[in-house]
Image (cartoon, rainbow, N blue to C red; front, top):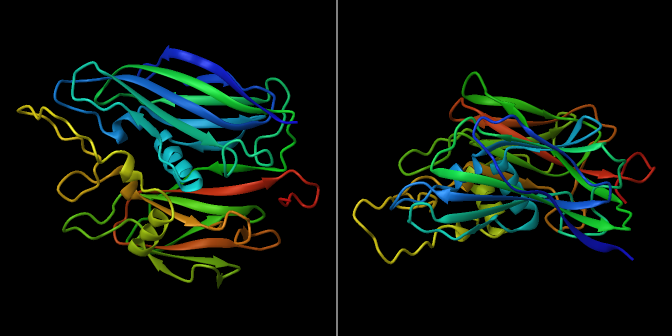
Length: 330
């Protein structure tokens, strides 16, 4: 019978800005998810660091098997991706305006569509084959005395049938208008997470990804065309809003000079971190019925329409099967 197993891999060790990437061998047993725990001190009286500042302390998280990436993204992208898959934002507590008060932030790196799912997890590996690499940012903002804890959630005696794989790609178009982004053919996709530098906010209604469509072998599939506002609303209403975890911060003593917590996502404040993301869900029913199958296809690509020619990130989420039938999930 499978058994859950929590392991501390890296326990409250100081993480300095600009430090060399941390590398750790991961356990050999099947892994459901990895928990990244940041413990930090609030830097400054009457101020609270933004969620973007806290997540921005780690610019890259990577899980490698024999040197090949199985998961690779910034900590911020992984936090949003996990919300898109699991339906829950990262844990953040407590929030206070007092200098040097402790704040804890927990982000999970998932390898299945649900935590502890026996059938969806990284499979058993050999010692030294599976490596976690974490890269801190060159500088931290609003954060003091950062420590990092890494815990691994293993499922002993399990034989997973499949796992999730996601690796970031980037594109900056040279002009506004339509441009193309290819997906690898062969994999089966559960969804795609997009990040756009520019998003509608207040009086400015332009976006890095104003519209998108999906084509397979040059024929429109699933998404003949959709606009930013519609797709944003779709994924935010089918998952718990990222805003909900962070916008209701009640401070009893609104001292002079207090800097409002800036992740509320309301027009009178700064744009919320989540406002920059779109999630295209190919598995809304959580039963693999709508997944995008590209095996045997010549080309699969998105046509994105940009109002603003600036950087975007694309993170396709593959479901990798462990069965012998052409790598297809069971």
